[in-house]
Amino acid sequence: MTEKLVWRKSSYSGANNNCVEVADLPSATAVRDSKHPEGTVLAFPAAEWTVFLQAVKDKQL
Image (cartoon, rainbow, N blue to C red):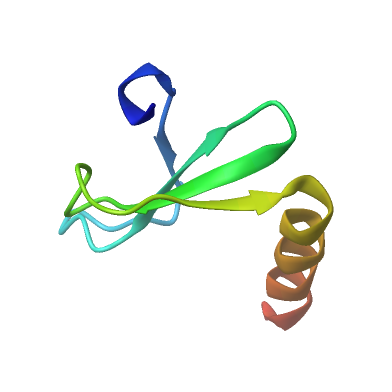
């Protein structure tokens, strides 16, 4: 499954690859550790991902 997805990193990711990558699914967002792309992938339903992103944005200074 993960080899067919288009993964992207945050523009805030550093050069040391300590970040997560996300990919769009039809009704969810997939998330994986950029250091272990062959590892576990978590999928979050669209509504939950939206709430998470808003919570992160609300915490930014």
